[in-house]
Image 1 (cartoon, one colour):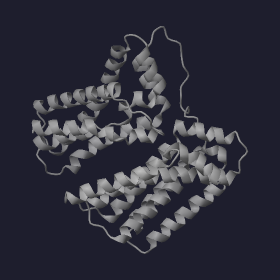
Image 2: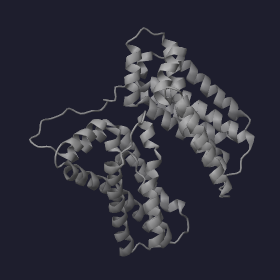
Image 3: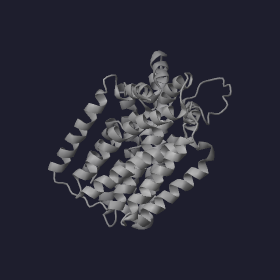
Image 4: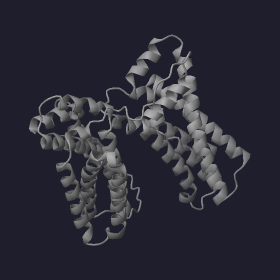
Length: 376
């Protein structure tokens, strides 16, 4: 098992595990920087536990479906292996990657800006560990996806009902034990994903189309579609979260938040073969970037239109000026995102989750927030 653990971990953490050393230092700097800023936000324990669980589960799922990790798992499956050792080594490495490189950063931010107790820290860590095991267990029964959805729903309901009772830790322990039992009975091949699920039949066409490629890519990567749908759902909910803020203040800020649509803004970074082809062939800068920019603009303008409709329904006061600002924000954020992809693509990533959570994704929203301040 140690050999399998090292084989998987060296790919994610580096030959000398340097990423495990660098990431805690970054989290510590992040914690102290925010803590010394004296920004304080009240976060209920249930919100903390639910946020930690869902975030960890999301990152873990991204790691499990990663095409980069599919190659490592395929190589392992070609060799003689013991089922349980392979499964637990693989889950342990991806769990360590999820917790120490992603969840730890989230907890550093949360605990830096909120009042906390030791019990809340322990509860968050236990929730993260449970989310890792439960996500791996659900992934191993992906043929029965509805069972996994029901399991997640029962877990969320249990958190809502028991988070402030002594039974909460027992519920976590029981759920983690159930996940471990499922993993003990899992097949090693159930963790192999070739990343081609859902790819449609390719028809012949007389000429190329960037739009056709983009829609095919989304069809092959359903998690990108889900993320876009979630951004549109956020656009519908934001008017309620802003409360009684004046529209002249809230609407530009909402536009800036909705510009953080990570998956559609990293298509070149996540597909090195596409980037090589686009840069190698003549005339592709305009031929690819213009449709790509319009595609991101379409995603942005739909989200901002939903936000404006929700705001008009809740508070009213939407003017032609705000509609023009919506178009301006959607177009400018699309242009900035494409320019970042073309001139500053993300390199040396280990797994697709590194792309989704790369700090570069905050550049465009920060620029939009600065513009929102000017517009206000």
